Image (tube, helix red, strand yellow):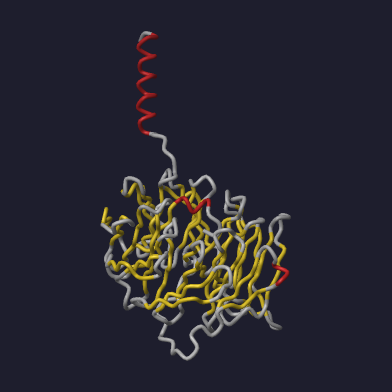
Length: 390
């Protein structure tokens, strides 16, 4: 073979190899949980297509995801205590560990080097190296004179290399500061009965825990944690009888606009609106059912609400200027989650029992795409990698 022919063969092989390994960014990618099959779908939110399915992620009946800073890796928190690192460019599992008996979610640190998981069984938080998934530290959520262990809920990342979380059984909020390399724990006791979930405001200043055992919310100012926890909206449902709660509201998607905070009322068919400066209730909006997610479009112009069983086939849209419901949609039975594209022109909505994800135009509410999936639930786009608390 001549040198010329050899060179041609090498060039041809290079072209073929390049074609098989097309470079792409991660900014318009995302992951959809298929809860019944222990799998996830990797999707392209620009083309509105499924790129690949990844199997073997265990029990995803209450799964959530955070992303690495470069948006390449999705950390999947499974209900079976599984922590799975998924490479969304290769479409495969990079690493998987079973770190507890029952976990409820997690967070990634400000510098992207630590992944924390909140656990029900045994109660507490485990912190892992984000690269290797090796255990860095365990924080048992012990309380009381007999060192009971509490379920941990509402785990979020906070500025200053910190994690914040709530203890459901203890009625406490803990602040874990990793700025010096090892956790320094500050405990805030007697914050209210049965905190069931928590959120952090988009600017990272306030951590807010919702209370299941009583009306009200608990607020911790992370700029001034020395001032302790403040209770707000106590007795907002005074005189009203709560209905049975079929699904706990989720606060992670709490809607924050410039002036207002919109959040679900526990055990009531209401969305509550609070003034962000005074933390006072200003309005109750009657809605179709018990709200689960109350989420703001990225520009704050709309708030989208989905509902618990048995009224879980609909989504309602609230105009944040008029504070009125302007549209009701029916994406299908058992709407579980909504996720806006980064600039809010589209919203993806999962309907578990209908077996589909529907993409809507948020301006005219028209259906753009419907993607069949197996029991879809959570939808998570990679722009979450650059948002506090998500």
